[in-house]
Length: 168
Picture 1 (tube, one colour):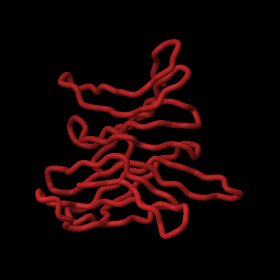
Picture 2 (cartoon, one colour):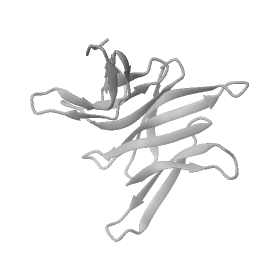
Picture 3 (tube, helix red, strand yellow):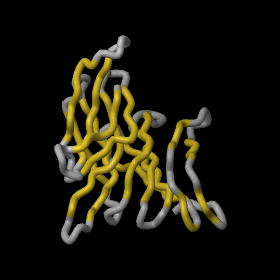
Picture 4 (cartoon, one colour):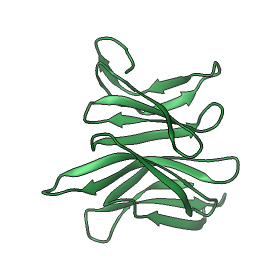
């Protein structure tokens, strides 16, 4: 599966897209998603049932060239048709950089709350409903990835500029 964004015509806007390719590199299908004025997919994985779950951001133009960017999470069926889409309020400046299946189902998402300049980790259920969130970085951080660990926890990567390590 290939994920990302593509420009819309000659505008500055972008739409999220998924493209399924076979083992010979041939395109089987491509889907483009209008999820706000701008949207991007940063990370995608295939579930055991063949569905795809992706994370990134969606952005709306408000007024006078101001924008509201929220973290985006969505699931599609095996043909790329949207099943559900969730956005997470972030004071208009956040994005997801990675997603994977969490311990005991659901998803672990890692990204950044740019307004706070913090690493943002979200744990959701199978439908994208928030179970918990944490931010890291004192004073700053940028979340790149969260992965499961064998002890049932998670390891987070990304640059952090901090005086002490604490979660909030």
